[in-house]
Image: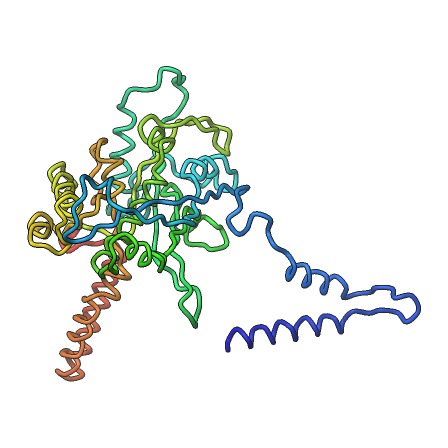
Length: 401
């Protein structure tokens, strides 16, 4: 119904535009207003020759294969298990985006390539990625490593912190149309610039398709029965990691290790190294150890070679104590050889874990308890909250520093 109303509105607007066209009775001379109708009609008729994801803009379309497990069905190896192909994965190359950011001139004078400390009076404050301890430590470590013999002493070695955001997005007010984009931001740019929509600093990296309904047909054909909820959840998690393996390709991993020479928008030639600084979500206290990777491999072996259920006791005994899934993270596969703990890459996801999570319900209940004590208690609570908020904005901690 909403779509019908929008269609009627568009037709009414086009008709109004036509009425504003001035045509003489004699020769049909077109006067003021022709351009408006012409533009409207061209927009209606235009179809991009390469679609929305144009190869001219660096977009690629790929497919990945997901292994399908089945309880009580054994295979000689995981590779021998039936697979399901997910098509329509639209993505851009990480290195194409990184080179474009460096070679662009719009923000050439606004990037902070040398991390530093920021102070407000005697207080050390943290406002951006480039004034964080992690950025300064990464920069200092980079300066101490062996230089490429082909680089002159004048070539600066710089860290380019990658900030990745990802979340499922509902596209309509009515209906179920949705997409799952990956965004990339430069951590060397001020958050005040990144936060301005008019600056277009968010780079669209990839769009993950939903798990198609045809997976049930493929599963039924392979095993003669429908996939369980546990299997579908496994496939969704596996799809996410397969997409990341596409993005963390050979070209990017070579740059991650050896850097790449780029002529920046200000004319300076630099060798850049692109570590990941922030990913959406955070799991403090967890370590991506070799033992953990071995346990995940053991769990997958139990599932595919021994036919164990995803919810079986043997699998849970291996993984539950550390809240793991039988999914090998792409970042673990690609970055662990460099000593990177994948769990250190995640930033707090305030919206999902804090504002909309369990804490929201807890905090609401606590407020009800305060309100039940009367107006005096509520006023005292508000007074203390204002003081805490003010100190937080100033960066003052409880220890006075």
